[in-house]
Length: 296
Image 1 (cartoon, one colour):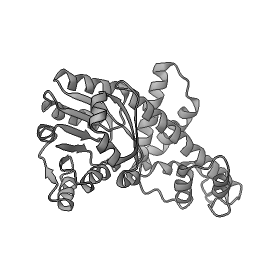
Image 2 (cartoon, helix red, strand yellow; image 1 turned 120 degrees about the horizontal axis):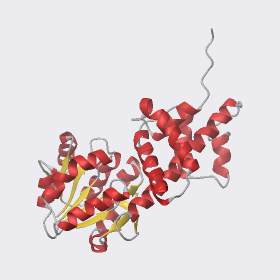
Image 3 (cartoon, one colour; image 1 turned 60 degrees about the horizontal axis):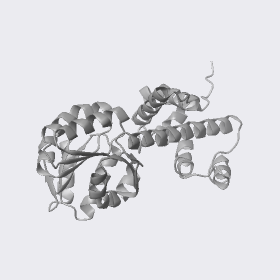
Image 4 (cartoon, one colour; image 1 turned 180 degrees about the vertical axis):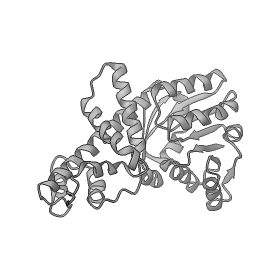
């Protein structure tokens, strides 16, 4: 029986992912550190959901377990309970954005007990998860990738297999690094346009000009109008974006690859993190735009 487990209390994608499986009629054993979220799944799909008391119980009950946790710290806290239940034939599919080294450590631990491991970090946030439109970036055991292909297709619009464990996580860090760079660049453009007294709206301003040219892209189209309205309701929290930028910069250091643009973008997210960490990562714009001068 497939299972979906270990969704963190602040993970935006996890709830949408499991509900895609449930909507397709897949029976699932679920666990969440926020018990209310697991019970909500049970209420929505009473005939398909079994709520487990722990992550250990989920893995024990199922051949395949999908795990989605928001941070490295959350992974380190929960993984021992997952590992406890690993026996030969059990498979773990970890969908979190972690470091390649962390994925390799978990894979080695699972395989040492006779289990199989696939990393499958996702590109896409809350709404794509709810719509089954995530992109899975996989590495690890190819037989697991083949075995869970149907489930990945239910939760996502595309899936890629990049080889050994770590390759999927490296691809995810590159993707999120580029996204972070783009968000900071858009914020600077909006800030400069506003400071220059230019319109920024999507009807006849900067956003419209960008959308008509080679720089048109879904990120600017989705986030731009909300940014100029200071609407930063979280789909992908800023603190998680900064975490991924940090991981990407660390990867660049390990490989001897300079990343000056990413370093500058990370500094912008880091500056905004304390006050706006739980807001959408578009909230970096609030620290970029000119503040009204105070009268004395």
